[in-house]
Image (cartoon, rainbow, N blue to C red; front, top):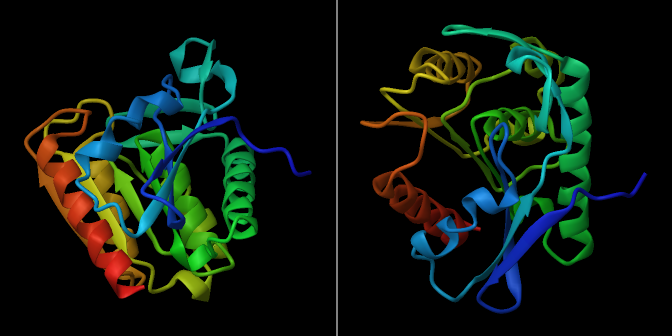
Length: 225
């Protein structure tokens, strides 16, 4: 199966040497994070291809079964816990893996591909990055959580044991509780991952300081590649 998720693509600079695949949150679409590209403050060189996929539309149980763009079904949620459809998570992981593979076909190897995501999109980015068979450039996990720690425990790959992790959360988030983000951080740190953790005075959103910090972090990763 070689079908790719529909996506918005933006090339910052020419002849891209890196790619950032950025996943939106529940109920949004790929256009949601397009404005971050200029806000990151990246130089024109090296060139970067940004890929903003659109999630498929599906009924979401915790939202009364309403159909909306979603990376997987959320069966129930509380401030400190999510029950999710793991089969749906795996389908989204497979779709994201295809996008990573396409970047390789276009000349950008996995080691120069970064996965980013907000909220539910960040959960897919986390899961895919930690279990990907090839080393990736890094993962950016914003206002998110680990949807299935057991899956990561079973399928974590040695190739990404040293993956750079940028994780951030709002300390007043009433959608994905900060405790869930900290649980993911603690889980990864206990497993030996180096997690760069940041908290910002905000709700379930992103802020200018956070985007600027991501830009700095990406520049550091590009320079080290």
